[in-house]
Image (cartoon, rainbow, N blue to C red; front, side, top):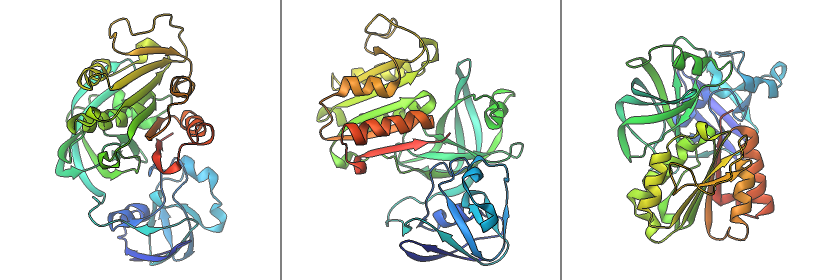
Length: 347
């Protein structure tokens, strides 16, 4: 079926099968449709059906709360076509640059499951085909037992890899995280769509790195650090990582972060911000190369970086309130150019 997108920047057409979602089909064919989570949570992929008929897969997706469904609004990430369609998208749409790896859908299998603490795990997904992705990108996972997909950032980095490692935090009433935590998942099959996301690190930009992560938002930052290490990026540039959690017990990847500090030879500073536990030491008791701070991670970042925001590219990931507050601090207060402030929010 032919899908015609009418956008602020012109019209675009692509083909979409009856079993495909509008967003995924467009992205796969190089049409840069608007999205953030690509899982029905945020509402960014809003479109209005002007002509044609569609079927919504997940009617309870949280992103529908922001739409006017009576007027034909849909979430393109949750909508399949029944006929040729014309969709009005109130945003700029463009074609993907040549050479950019386009997302695809494939089957993967979960392996190497590790419980990092009571409500955080990571695991690898062995893919049927190699995946090309940029440091900072994510994939959407789906399983038959749970309605709707969930987005998880890659922890590892490789230009092309048959395996991705993902970090998951269990959320209250989170049906997908409950599925992961409540059963033996090693060997389970999942559907993988990706890579997705534009909060990506490109060494050729030649800027110092600032990473601000809340909770499981640290995943994409680990991928960025892995690529930076592989490029010996910290020989000529500096890096700052601010990782916020509630308490010391909630921290993960401490050894890996310490190893990155050592490899960077003094050019990388990692600060762990605790919002619900007061600490009086300046460094972590078991990992003295990692600094400690009290308070919300965005506030800890603003205090430490005051007057040092020149020549940065900033990456922000985590819960939506934390991301929005950090973006305000970076763009409005620190006057960072929006081009060099990149973020993901999946909640």
